[in-house]
Length: 397
Ligand SMILES: Cc1ncc(COP(=O)(O)O)c(C=O)c1O
Image 1 (cartoon, rainbow, N blue to C red):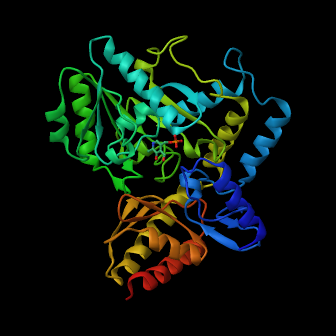
Image 2 (cartoon, rainbow, N blue to C red):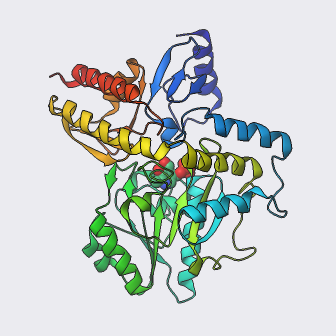
Image 3 (cartoon, rainbow, N blue to C red):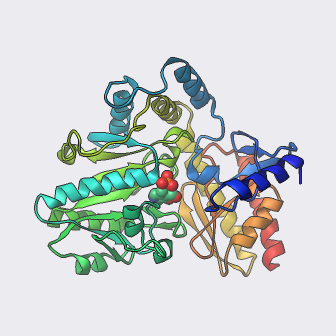
């Protein structure tokens, strides 16, 4: 290990609150490539955690950030910057008729979405939100309470009240859990942290109809599965079901911190002046980066590439998986792919990293792949080869 690596680990251990245990030092990135400080090249099939969807240091985004940084970085929301409404208009045109609130992260986007649902519901005496088992919505207190995995809440009691978890992909469970106090149902259309579990399209249609019947909101957390990841700009477009609110973050500005939600016009004026706020939300620099991301979706064939490489990777990985007894299957949508193992995936992730392939894990036993949407066929082939190699070392043929 290099001197810089050793120094960085020591500083990290001495001065950083140990909520993470990072594995590797990177100093540079370009497209789907990362380099360590000794010049070793890695193939990145994590993209942050579905953050750098256009690849590292995308030309459009880098230029937009540099230009905007010379003009105006921040002005607060007490004054107007021209980019924020321009970005809101673009996001609405690409999704559904409504309005946008901007903030800085996924948890903050979900908090805002939850507050909107509560204000909607409280007007008629309702404030319970049904969420899904195995879901993940963030680490703030309310988003933890919404999250359907108790292990994340342990030690942080008392839980924020007003959330009720039901099994995912089970419409009868939603019907049974409903009471007159329920104001919304919240879910990820593809559960990410939970292990790359896509919703059943028929279930989503029934859920939409149920929400209409009961006059409750359908809230979709697109923090991980949105922004092109499924091969459509927004995740709901890949399922053909219209939510009332979607939350966004991660890839919205390709790595510059930003979050937000889009709410249907019918519910867009529930939050009013002074109801909710965020100092940095919609700051010009973030908006410039996010507008560049939208331009890349418009002009660079990113979504088509995601669909093409996603289908190819699913096929190749499924073939490879059949050769190894520890692989139970491959699942996902677009470039959100999980290789399901019969045991924890951490060791395979480590073996892939040894082969200079950056991956993630999810759920209990899933090797999670979230590559930049701009990967080439050669990148896909190289990744499959390295995963096959890692699996061979892990569980043999
Ligand atoms: C579906 C989903 N929602 C919310 C979050 C929280 O986002 P953030 O870490 O930006 O707060 C995440 C993060 O992984 C996520 O995957």
